Image (cartoon, rainbow, N blue to C red; front, side, top):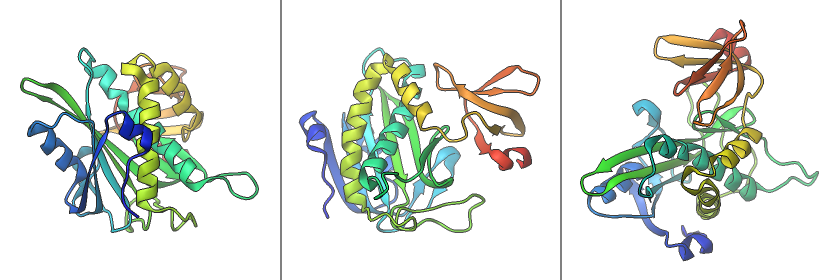
Length: 266
């Protein structure tokens, strides 16, 4: 099956660049921006050999998994604090695309997709997908954003310090091109709701409805420090709010999150 855009995305001016093999779709998308591409442009590949995640970590992918990045032009006057909330737009778009791709089971239930702060999608509590949001200010152009989406469609990597899963391993008959087409449509829907950041309260509400670990024990590691407590919510800037045992609140802008029993042992 070929990679194609959702018709609504194509009508809205989004374009697509397809590769058989790439080191990183996000690296390619940012290189295109530096060379003068304005976007919005989706860069997608059948096989990604050098994907990356947060903090420079590698993202392993095999042929058949989903690897795509969106070069998206930041509207003039959009401050960096608003741009940062696009990560929640991306997460919500991917969660919706996954739900539409898999559909409900015969009993009316669907797979247990959950959004893990700040940028993962879980299936049955195991990591299924990761999102990487990168911003760069280009001379004479202003800021551009690249949002990368990696999904374990055909297979999940082994030997990681956390549980992983894939759509195929969970019995879901989904392929990467089909998921990609849905994602280009759900991104457009979520981005229009976000509306330059003005609609983030609605994005936040929808994101929280699909959040993993909400109301339960959490540990957030930021470097050598760890914040423990209860995952209470995310605030208007997208920071994770932890309620500590003494009742105080701590806002976390970035870090590695552990839930449940893993939280107390982290």
